[in-house]
Length: 437
Ligand SMILES: Cc1cc2nc3c(=O)[nH]c(=O)nc-3n(C[C@H](O)[C@H](O)[C@H](O)COP(=O)(O)OP(=O)(O)OC[C@H]3O[C@@H](n4cnc5c(N)ncnc54)[C@H](O)[C@@H]3O)c2cc1C
Image (tube, rainbow, N blue to C red; front, side, top):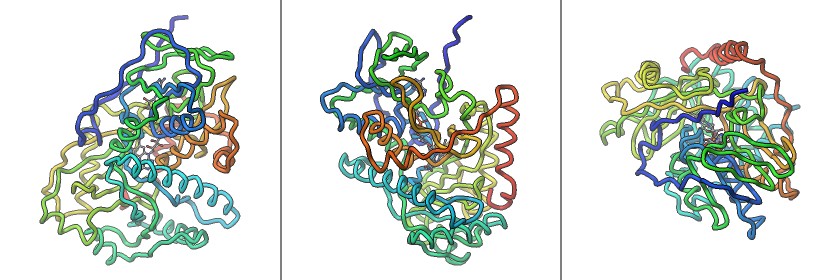
């Protein structure tokens, strides 16, 4: 049978455009042997590398990525490091153990990131003043009450906000109610992963632009890449939705493509029209609603399009078309800024499962995997990355216990049924989104 190597396309859009060029590490070539190998240098893979290095200071650890650091979801997300998750669909006291477990995982992730951002002096606009969760239409308004009940039950500090209070803070009268949850951090996502990758411990080697094309199973898994191979005692996959390209999680996880746009930097006068807060992040209480930010450098960033594109980024032409959707949402919220152009648009792919579960654990002999966070993987991915390093090292911890409790993923049908089902599932997320888009 002919061998079709997996493809790892990328583009130059997104948050990276706002940063100085970073020189990637060298592509790996030749034959090597490593005790530990991680595939994927997103937040999961990097957190795993830091923890492995701590646990095994005398071992050599290799991290491979098919792309440059920052080109995966970890460098393309909206930059919300969530401490208090919103569980859509109603607050159920019987689910308290789940809420508490997810909260511990999130908090651990935020704490780890804070320590690293501070310790390495990573300039990623870290802003730990929480987020605004907002509602404009009926379905999101119902979620407001559910989320508030959950926050109350978990004793998570928050402030309830009516329309006029939101307008005063954020400079938009679009929303009818909201909650300011005091915990959680906003970040410049690409700057965060660049900073983490550039501060990896000495016993970690990072090789970018090195796509793993195949994994040969066995007591010592063998990884094949374009110009060489690596034999490793332990392999950790932190490949998000692309695990299936090398034979793992087939029919368990898909990539859903999101897109958004950045305005140019607003003038001082334009910023004055945006209320009292200097920078902020808005999450919709409808799961398909728009995510909006006022960044530290004074841009509005809005992401509101989600679609199934076969787990791929959008091409130039499609991004240009999606800009119309971003634009309409932007002008609806900020009519006073309707003259402000977008500077660029971007897309990113997030790993989702049919039942919203995550993946954590052993996949085959000496092969472990963590990932699939359904659009909420900044803090969670950091925790899962750390935990999978501990799990693969036989280290017991509360974090491993928490991450281990993942429901099995629902099976997804093979193509072409997968494509139809995935497109329908993603479209169904928009049900009742109304004014929150
Ligand atoms: C547009 C967008 C907005 C989002 N917003 C938020 C948000 O605000 N807050 C939040 O918590 N989450 C958000 N998410 C989700 C979050 O970004 C992800 O859950 C998280 O970044 C996943 O991290 P990861 O390290 O597991 O995966 P990734 O960051 O995708 O890293 C996986 C890496 O593996 C590499 N790889 C894959 N296969 C191979 C291979 N065979 N060989 C070598 N390398 C390989 C890839 O190149 C990639 O760099 C968003 C996602 C998107 C797309």
